[in-house]
Length: 467
View: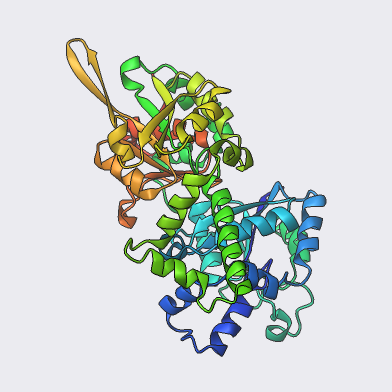
């Protein structure tokens, strides 16, 4: 059976972690202090970490062989990044990792996710394989119905009699996962899974709505539930809005690389001119009154950039415009559009409108100083039999604060993380929003948002289908 294979980046594909921890030891970082470790990674130049760490045990050629042999349904790179980086010092971790994979592993797609989200919540674990050097990641994966492969570089020291890989429970232990030190063993592990069923369990959603959330999106599009959505009366359809930056195009990935290059040129110029003051410190001092130096640098960049040229250089995320057009033409929503905060001092709104025009999509341009939740309606009101009917609208955005603002205004918030599995809101984690990795998954959001309360009243033997 062909399964999806996810391979960790740091510690499995590239040796960034061991070099980083050796360096931390040298400079006296307390390795028991998680804040100090996060600070080290946040202030590190990840291009240096990759350069000094290098690939681990010819991993690139081995991953290429896995792809070429076509024994798996698909192969992905899977990497976490620190939100400490993204919100505070903002290192170049994500951009450098994407650049490395595009250059050296163009045959697989890299999926990145915040380190606050477990990997089994990022992508679908059930029935699929994760290779990781983090034991907590492996255990979480197995508990959610997946097949875990724990990567240990010194496996032969731990098990001298092991000739290839360790199977689950092989030595009478309670270890429910495989252990390897070489990616070449993965095809054999896949065959072993086929030959012997490993006990797994389903955690998470109530069994009543399991039919909706466990299906692949393509399966859901053929289901009675989806066909029923198309029969919704106009007063229950509502509107759906998509963010532009980070949902349609990877705007900030390209712009941050530009900014990094610009700062590097400033540093090189300072060195050439013999300046004693480090240019990075100079920038920090220059904008210390603002309290957010990166915001200052970003504003300067966007004031001077040619937005048409920037959009041409940006990568579109997973055929986003085509998929939004498909959602628009499905007739499940009254209105489908793109809502984006824009600056008034350059041609941002015009460039974005031109970018969407080819697919007949409308841009709702909201001034940057106005919150997105205040610029678009969170609730649609329709008059039905002399009574006002309210229906919640949907906002899909890659920024959590904007999603939460929209929910607070009464709408349905959806956090977009590329290639993330469909995830329900979870009150226990204080997460009131859905998470999707495919733009078209608003269909399932719409279905569950309208009928989830009814679903939970049904017995476990009944299946909810629209009348």
